Image 1 (cartoon, rainbow, N blue to C red):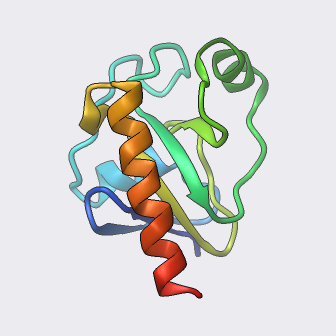
Image 2: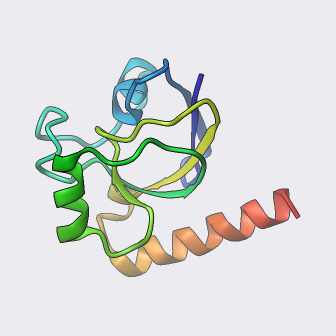
Image 3: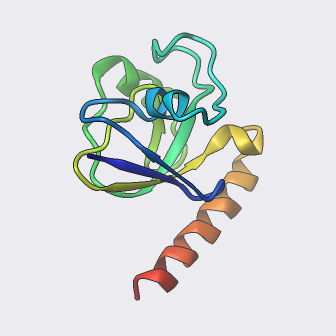
Length: 118
């Protein structure tokens, strides 16, 4: 069963096999910005995957990634599905999608992970 760790929120969200991060967050009562009903159209649920084994993007999400993904690991929470492992992400909406703030959060998350797993 995949487990999503939202590093900038310091929360863990357990997902069922095949369940998206957004669906698991909603089920767990975690607030998550969303608008399009998980159709991979709006980007409000965007995250950056810091580490973990995730399924490949589906075609609609891939189009969105190619148009908006500035950071490696850019994904949509409504489409992101982990495999049987921990997946660590940073939620972009928590920083109002500010690229500089997201980059700083990613640096902090990567540094913390390196310190946890030398």
